[in-house]
Length: 258
Ligand SMILES: [Zn+2]
Image (cartoon, rainbow, N blue to C red):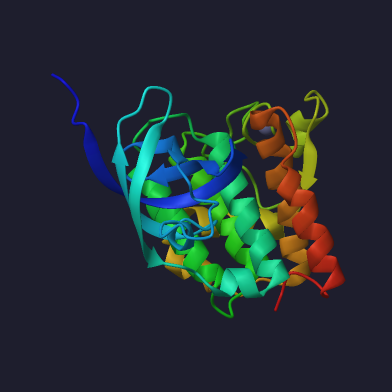
């Protein structure tokens, strides 16, 4: 079956880089085709009518023509611009983090409608007055889940037994919790308090909209961050650049809570 020469898709603009004189290569995340890279021709020219619709983090309807190396953007229309992400340094850094994590975890051209809904809902949440750090931790957990890396939070990943109501450990290599009895024979594990573990489990089993509204103490959120990041970094085999940027910007502006 020959593929259609042109098609349209909704997309979130995750990443962009300049290409040639006036073009850009965009990394898009789409509902049906997952992550794709496309070329926006002439988009850096002042007169470009597409440019305003292809800003970072925009949700847009994009019209494309099949190309040899990259498909070519012929037209674009903004669905949602998430303008608050551009007016605020912490929100913008949080959106960069969300975009980079999706870009790094998602394989090319693999449909993942859950991940698409998740990035949209997370960008929406980052435009509200809700807790930004909480939104990112909910996103981490749900995205890991949708990409097939759901952390095991109820059974010890070494011994297999149900975990007890006590402080535990987390092993990135095992992708889940390790009980205190198995911990001393497990390398590369990090402590996780019972409180933090309960919050992780609660987020994992709650619908995203409910998880965003949880009331979690800042100290607990601060504890969740490294636990999830050790795991993410293990999966990606290198750190996320935007993680450091987000934490620096948040510190400058007095924490992740706004
Ligand atoms: Zn165990």
